[in-house]
Image 1: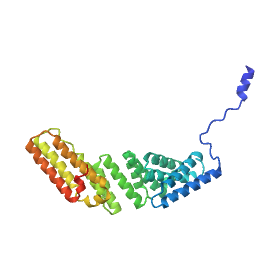
Image 2: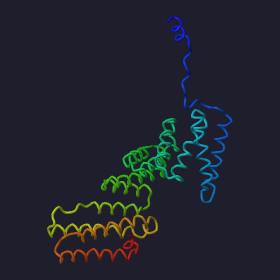
Image 3: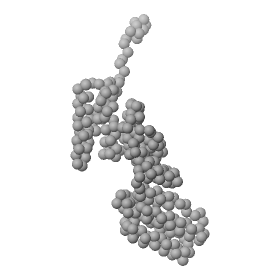
Length: 293
């Protein structure tokens, strides 16, 4: 028993396994950093953003982070890796993880212009990743920053506006869009058309099928969609065809809704003529508005 106790007391403990034991080779760390940076710059210099160079840069950066988390060069590659994830991979989750980890490891970065720009990328990733609340909060943090550039504030206001639209906070979105146009001194017709279209589409249907209620509902919704067109159509047709499709789908949904309603045939024909008139008007602006499905 004494021998067993002595063995337990004086036997050195086994070494714990460390998944990140730190630098293995300063030469390798330097190599991964240099090669990753070189490939990253080559990718951006290429006319069409060479995907092979992006692949090489991404692999080198990821390996550097995994194998040498404490190396001084490792922190420098996080923003570039986030750029690859956001602009080339279009991977919101990895973009979010990379930027959040970088800002956690280097909190002072949040108070630099590079950090503010990264927050803009983070806000955009939140929005693309289906997290409008996080996107809006991040955008608002940029707007409060005293070092944010006009470009950064414009990006933040655009993301805040789109986030509010997704959250169906249309009145706040309209105010945010006004602030965006004031800040940038330019118009955003595609965004304004999207806001108006979604707001019109959200109008609730009447609970009863009384003739007056149906006339009021279809009339107001059709007029709302029609009023969204003139201010935005020219720039939208060139800028963002997906918004044209959004408007088209909204109006065709209204037309199908009318067809599915059980009501007096004379009343249905009267409303149908009104909807057709709006489609004819839209076609004079851009034929894609009535041929999108």
